[in-house]
Length: 258
Ligand SMILES: NC(=O)c1ccc[n+]([C@@H]2O[C@H](COP(=O)([O-])OP(=O)(O)OC[C@H]3O[C@@H](n4cnc5c(N)ncnc54)[C@H](O)[C@@H]3O)[C@@H](O)[C@H]2O)c1
Image (cartoon, rainbow, N blue to C red; front, side, top):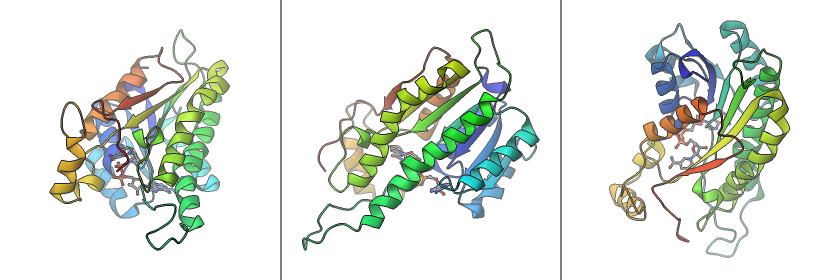
């Protein structure tokens, strides 16, 4: 797919990796729809990216009706939907038993899995449905592409990351079967598993913490740049042979227990 010709949904597109992706896609000429809970920065992002080719939708990725209606609106504004990039997510930490021996609240675990895993599946399935109803784009018969965001925690979760790791491991595990489900329709599915990236989430942490996180990265010894994530998204869009795969983007990092 030619990045300049596509319409893309970016969930979590108001911040961090989603925002960097929206910027890179817009710079390449794509039309972009931001699905995010952060209404306060939504309009600002639209102005920054160019109101003619950008829309903001105040959408909770867990909500079927909101996502359906936003996708319908994207199609009515921009025509076919080619790419769906799922970046919305949260990363809370809680040990299975706390220092006093009390069990972690079940609702915290449920909320993380709901947003990260079920929210990703919800948006992906509805985007795939919209893509399945449109004409093919090229000789390969491509109709669309879904890109999910997991985490290296989906492979080696740290202390306190049971919920986060389970939610991201679920995303890694669903990548291949979803690609298999959708292959006859010409829709590819890939996932990116980032390591430690310099998004507002991490850059708000004390410098000492950031340095400690960077020091575990073999090379380059730093946080990843959000634009490096966006660069991989663009590669996934242009490389039609990449399908059913999760790619780590982590400078060779393998997370230690803590
Ligand atoms: N930053 C990292 O180091 C890192 C590493 C690995 C994986 N990730 C993953 O990358 C993704 C983006 O992370 P980030 O660092 O850019 O975070 P971020 O907090 O900067 O951005 C996340 C965005 O998702 C939105 N969001 C949260 N819940 C939502 C919901 N229910 N519906 C719609 N939007 C919602 C937020 O409003 C926010 O704009 C997350 O899935 C995260 O788990 C990040």
